[in-house]
Image (cartoon, rainbow over all chains, first blue to last red):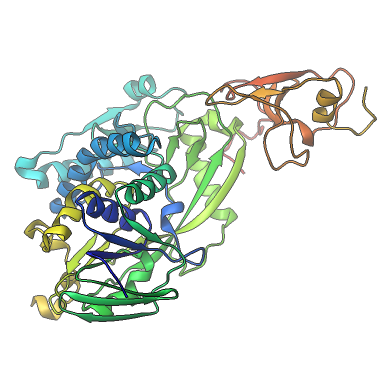
Length: 371
Length: 90
């Protein structure tokens, strides 16, 4: 049996960020990853580091998201300095385009709700009308009524982020174990024995960060992670000169010049097939936003399963029955990478989650317990 | 000179050119590679349209083949005719 200070189950953006933070704090960490059979939401996301629409009705989520976005530049610089991998983080603000007056009014109402709910923490936004927006965004389509803008938003290269977190983890002394699906787990307070194909590992702490795999794993550790798959499809254009100065919720241009088009959500179980109808919807809305997109060729498209908790908010928990077992689940693994590496990991290292995360416990789904 | 049915990429290689484009990020030289439409290394500006996969286009007399210098400049003509109906895509 190999002994560690902590075992992180799941090597995606959530697990890798937490493992990176733990290894940086000088814990001896094993990071277990499945293999090509895993659902791998980390490879099918859009790359936004997005704040403006997070947490309507749950200001504690907006605060957590903002704190993560504020950690991002430090994390990105640290990763690039350590691993040489550029994470491509840009925080130049972001917009959500509205394609009708009704959409604009609804968006304004949402932004205003966010501002009121934020209290002293604050939430600064601007509704930008199409005349000013046309100066900000070249070639804006006539169908666009306006947009909501905040300075908090940005984007990054999620594949480079994953690569950098893994490389930084190993360089910090972490042990990465791929093709290591957990076949058996024996839990006791402060004492966990995990069996994988190649042997057994033991640690006083374990973090469940296996994305969609957490739903089945969690009960073995006295935890609950009722996450479900949500399919998203993305289209990618040929590389073009840099035109877009900032990301839009559904359109972003990468550092290399490719333009990604997205924002679809389908409740299709574990099916990862692409569908022409959804692809057409994505393309249609993109071309309405920027007619010049029509001239660009699509060079690839894919569908991927993302992780969705029942109410859309993250699930962070520590096991009461088995102290030392933690879980982290979220939909926004890119945006929350800053928080996971720099805020959540230190909590795990300390042995307890900050009270600020209590609202994210899975206990909130148990209506009878809350009553 | 290339036989009828040859691709534009083949014509470029047969004419002795060592490079057909420069890459968007670092401006490195590239030449056609897979010759079957999967590698995207043969991108060239053909008859005024940028970023065409030259290995997938049959060469014909008078065809204008220019090097693709870095990323495509937006605003240049599209390879696809604009729909006359004027309504959306697809």
